[in-house]
Length: 479
Image 1 (cartoon, helix red, strand yellow):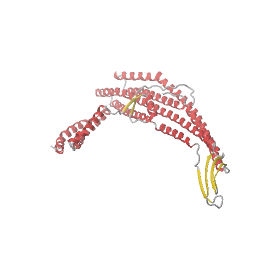
Image 2: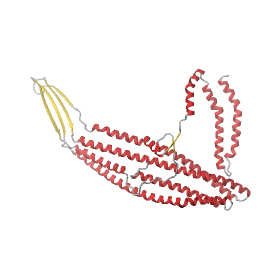
Image 3: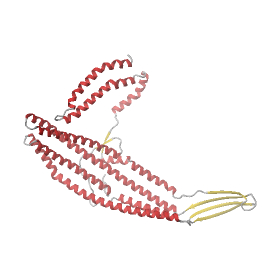
């Protein structure tokens, strides 16, 4: 039978068994998908996924696979064999050695990846190279003037000749000041590169700290999901036995729904944290942190001084503006020029002469204006640098105060609150199993314990973010 005949007879033959099999299985999961009883929050997503998979498999079996079969068998056997020589090894390689979609890394590896891939660093490097290339423009010598004259130059005879060559040497002081300006600009570019490098490193560390925060929040909610499932079963059994009221049972169901929603949000936040880490590293694959321990980020010392990189960058920007003032001033100096002339004045020939000229800027109103503008620009830059350094000092002082406050908060959790939360959980759970407490008190106790642990995770995250910000603006350099 031909391919078309096989498809024409096979699809109608498979329609009823495939369709009925998937339909029966899908209908069997419908009650679970629309359930609202206890535990439905866990059952509904599972039923939805199964029903969707069955419907998709029906479409694949009856439509996609026959079409693909038709496309493959529409060519000759010889061509298919030649294709398979290349396609089969590629498919086998893709199956046996799949391209990794994710990569487990350390913090230092993440920072190295970000420093290699960050476009701001690449652009800054190119800008520095561009400034270095401008050194060739330091001595900007004008074009050489070449003039030839013939005719009645120095008398009635029309056979006189004159060759004249003139070359302006320009301002001899201007190249020196231009070279100084370029050195300042290169230094500014290198300092800006170091500044961007600190910012990129801080961004990766913030993304790393955010992943640890999201990971531990997810672990905390997952642990509570285990006991809430047991509470749902216990509550349903006690309700059937008449030990608790419908209100208590509904409260358990509401707690389960709330915790299920928080679990979904925690999953989404964890995925967002992974996306943020990959984005901060400019990575095409998902980067999985190999370290998930919730630790406090180390602060090297108290009374931190402002970052040397920031200070030198601000100061060098001011020095660059000052160098530009000197460049404008140097344009007031005279310009030198040299010339050579050879004449033929009949009957004499080979009459040579040399000339040296000086061009003095007599009308220097425009130069004075540019010098004044450069001075004002220099004063503005110096004022801005002083203001930025002042803000940097205040920022560091505020961060030190915030760090101390958050560290005291963390010490409170570690010394008392976390132990109290564990004791509260154990006591509430023991009394609930022994029916010594009602559902309301049990739920309140467990929620209080969970809030304490969640707040501790958030406190550690806030402390780490402040510590990373302090590292960015101070002389600390933790890697």
